[in-house]
Length: 490
RNA sequence: GGCGGUAUCGUCUAGGGGACUAGGACACAGCCCUCUCAAGGCUGGAACACGGGUUCGAAUCCCGUUACCGCUACCA
Image 1: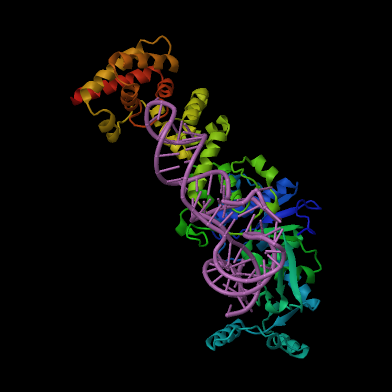
Image 2 (image 1 turned 90 degrees about the vertical axis):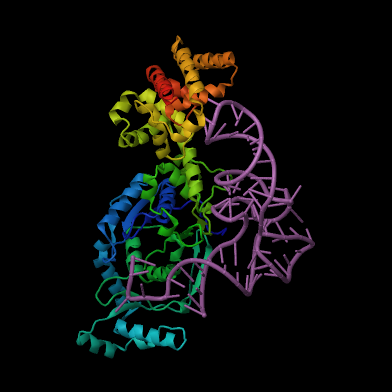
């Protein structure tokens, strides 16, 4: 679409994210919010939040809270006050009546039950039900009569002849013949607004310049454009982004595992990794770049890179992405994120970690490269915090098979380390390699049993780093304890 | 059913007429590195849905078919 410049907006853009508070913040919603947020940041616009709570049956305060929490965790902060759609029903009502007054809409006295019956009958005959304006729109006399009798009525929009089209920022031109659009209800007979009416009324009031939302709204768009025009308002730009599917190609749902962003937060994901991953699910910078920080994402984001095709959510790649960000994040920042988790695991208090900040960061440096989730960091941090380790049975059978020779080697290892002048990796390695040479065994024959003695496990960071961060006293004590344990076992 | 949307490795994608024997990433397999595990490096298998056009030439443009998705409510 050469004639549309989607590269940058002419006026200060105002975009919005408009979730219904009927559940938790879904990854699909989070991504829509992200794209809107990115767009606002990129072009120095406003990112507004509107809670579409007009469905009183399904909307809950708990959901509203969960959506706020999710957005806050992700760092997708919004401008201005949150708009609650339910607070604007008076305006929606007034706008619907304005349309009635101008002749763009009409009263429909048909009881909902009758409409339903007609629909069912048509279906029973195997026909496609078509709404018949001729049956719904009454003459002025009939209308006046029913009005006088106080009969309830809904207000329907009178869809004009012709066709409705727009240049979607992701799909380019989309057109609908108006004959395929029924005269839709904009105000129910109980006086409450229907979705399309509320959305358009609110978007106009909020000064929204670009409506970026899921492509499940494509068929609502012509109705909304018609409403803008009938209301005499400027039609905003539209960008319909694709859906996110589960691994079976179906719309993402609970069956596909975690779909709420809160679940990922609790699984040990970094918000920037979640955002980076989500950004790439429906958008591409145009080259092979994948791992990006938020500033990079803002700099590179463009609606031109938005995709048309639904993407499948791959948790494996999300984890990989998190691993990349774990390696990228400034260590102090990581310490801030992990410290509360360490405390929750009962290993140390946040205050304690602050007091030993340098040491703590050193431990994190050791673990971050090996972990994909912050939870894994916490699990692997255990040996650095506890007083005595528990021996993993598998580790014992694998590395301590022969208790006699193992205890012998560990005892020698203990003495060699204890004789060191300085407690630092280079000296440790030199001493232990020399010991191995003297005994005519490989280094691994010393390092592996030692690893079990220090951590209780078969896997850990480099053994000299473990010795360094566990510290001289505790290391020697643990090795001694292992020797006793093995001698007792003999 | 009607209308609309979409269609490149298993998955995320690059590609916008010749640079494509189709590139990268995740996952998978092997190798290297190595005290274990990761990380990292290297290698490998793996895709243009199908059929017609347009063109000297199509993954790229057009049409159709198929498949999938969405909408079709006095839900949002």
